[in-house]
Length: 187
Image 1 (cartoon, helix red, strand yellow):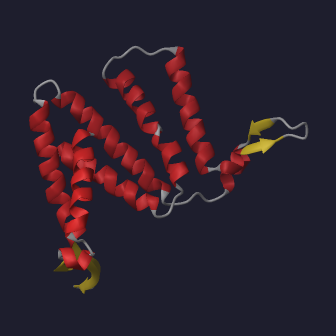
Image 2: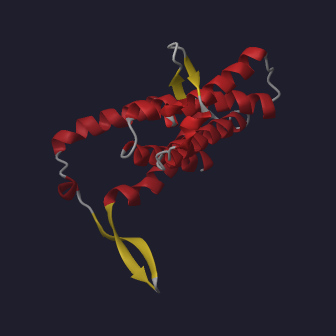
């Protein structure tokens, strides 16, 4: 259940960020997930650390900062590039938080996989991940959500269920949906 929740939460955060941030920036920052897993392995799973790993972690975080704050890279009068903290004065895109949330959720999912791998079979994990994922995402995908005022609080509530015709889906889309499902299953 936790894997399904973490996986879907990471995906939803990423999909939301894609609306507001360029895909190249999201991809560049997304590699931090692997770096964080190395850091978690060193800190919590007693994996060996080395100068190369620590240097790689530091450089990766500096790279993420450069993606968020491209003005950090300055060029001297001699044409030599250098990093300047003055470039961090600009306001970053607030939607980067959703990229970092997706990294956090997917990284946490990987840690859960490491723990569950010791006691649970892979097929059982896959079944529950897909089950929980479907249950959690169905209301988000097939219901129309609208703003409502309840006891003075503004909330988004489902108003009606979408049918296939409302979504513009036809039987010709079914093979493509099956292919997407197969790709997700293989992943």
